[in-house]
Structure formats: C-alpha cells, structure tokens
Length: 205
Image 1 (cartoon, rainbow, N blue to C red):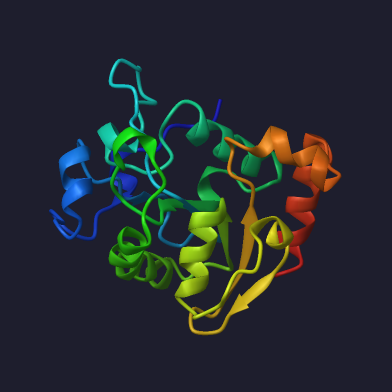
Image 2 (cartoon, helix red, strand yellow):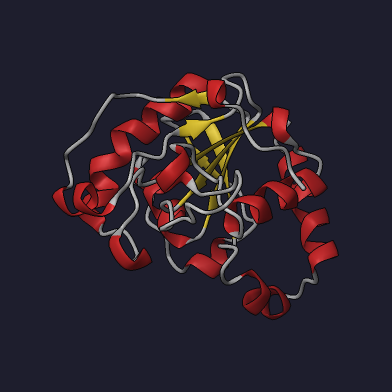
C-alpha cells in the first residue's frame, strides 16, 4: 500500500477556477498536484475520476483535492513507480486537467488547453529531472507545451522525448485502465515493464 499524501503536500495554484463551465458543474472540488516541490519526477495523469466519497482515505482527487488519490488508478500508479524505485518522496503527482469530467469522459482539447498554464506552472515550480505522463491525453498535453506532435501514443510509450522549453525529458507510460491490455502487446509482463521504467528514467540522470 503506497502512503497517502498529507494535505500539506497539496500545491493549489488558485482558490477557484471557472474556465471550463462543464467541469465546474461536474466537479466536487479542484484536484491539485501534490508531493515534494523538489521531487525528481512530475507524474502527469489525464484528469481526476468521479471518486468514491465512502472510501476511508482514497476517495479520489474529486473529493480530496489532490491528484492520484483514488483507489484504482492512484494507488496503482504510485505503487508502479515505487516498485521501479521512485517512491513517495521522489514524485509530484498532478493531472493535465484538474477537474473531474462528467461520467469519467475524456477531457476535451479545449479543457486540456485551459488547464495547460497550471500544468506548466507546476512543472516549472518543481523543476524535475523528468516528467512521466500517464496515458495519451496527458502525453499530448505535455507535448503541446513544447509544440511537439504525437504520432501514435503506443509508439511513444517508454520512449524519451526532450521538451526544450521545459528543460526536461518526458517518459510516457500506459494509462492504468489499459495497462493489462497493452503490456503483452508491447512485449512486457509487469516485472519487465517495471524494470524498463526504472532503466529508462535512470538514463536521464
């Protein structure tokens, strides 16, 4: 079980945001990045899910106000990176879109664009060694910070892309919802995938 982040680790960039009316209507609260501000990695997900208000701690960012704090994806990604050698103290977790999209739909391009200044601000504040993106929408949004086109998400998984304006390398990973489906098709089991994550990130420093 990965450690649950302390509320003091939440890095809120605004008291409120109403740029996306559909997200304002759907969310319970804004899900901000959390973790050490001197973390080696910034981990960028797509958007907070609907969450579970009945959970003890892992209710999800839609209720906790902190990214990657839900039972399935939050714990899965935190555990995956910890198994690769990048635990709680090495990672700052955030999302490309800070509010829950209704019915857990994919964020729209306009929503990703509206949230991008917050995302850039988080990455610049932490100034990590690398950015790890989870899923195609997060990867596309981070690439857009540097006007990089993504030609096929699966082809980018575990590749290194240098974002010069951010001064960091970006490492895309599979979204946890599709990890089991795509791992074998990419030629990995979980053990090999974890080891490849460790090796890829360690080549950066």
